[in-house]
Length: 130
Length: 219
Image 1 (cartoon, chains in turn red, purple):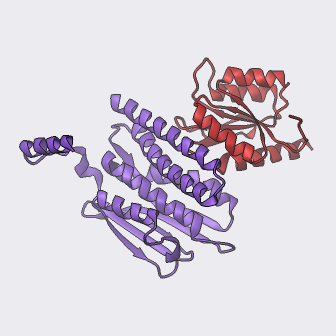
Image 2 (cartoon, each protein chain N blue to C red; image 1 turned 180 degrees about the vertical axis):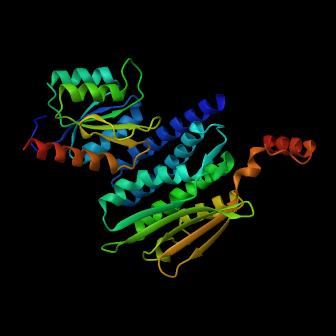
Image 3 (cartoon, rainbow over the protein chains, first blue to last red; image 1 turned 60 degrees about the horizontal axis):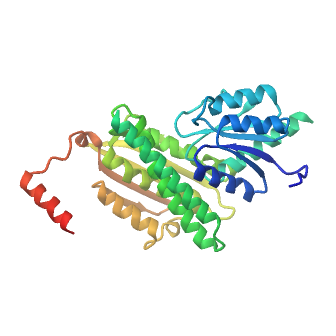
């Protein structure tokens, strides 16, 4: 798939397949390009392969493996500060202390929420860059 | 400890079921079918939210209504924030606890009424405020008010599934419902508070309960 400058590319990290599928649907319906990952490690290797060339990371917190979503968000921000961060969880509630002005979204979220937040975050990032 | 785990699993299963309905809904061409599946998804999410709070509560048996309402309003915020026309306000007394048997029906009732107001009370260019208030009303009762200054009764259609659901769920929690539509819509629900629910429902006579169980097994 060729990437036009206006397409928002999102790495979606969620271990529960059906929840990930729905989230991917929501984002793809808005014309976003979605790259799915079931673990934080997979997401990190995707980002490495693309040299951090994505617009946003949308990640769950609790996932199997040695890295949770918050740790992932921290690493992504330190290596690729341009990537907008949206963190979600149904277990923990994160206060607004995410790096790089990232946003926390509690689960369950409404279907409009991720799209809207990612749009706002990436818009903010692009205006800062300019 | 076990109860926490049970509630946690119930929450996860309901959240997954809700996602499944969401996925199905988004693959429907027909807008009305999509809308129905979305509503069903919202209802399952409402139940998931209750089990989530139950799993986090100290006793796993009670939910603070204030926390539920705050969580729910938070979840609806992207809709209302996106839409400058609608203000969502809550005035919730802290520490109104309801038992698990009341929490699930009440959660669906609140979701139904608040979501309904957010979606339908202010069509087109109309703007206004939705107020959610929860307080103890004395005599061991809790009063919940969901009020908007929108178009009024027409968005809570008698005979609609949402209305029917709310009616029967209010009955389930031994509550009463009052609907006023002078300017906008005000739905007040009053029900006995959870203090009586801490004891398990002991049957009046053990034989009666045994008979009941047997007859239900035979069905």
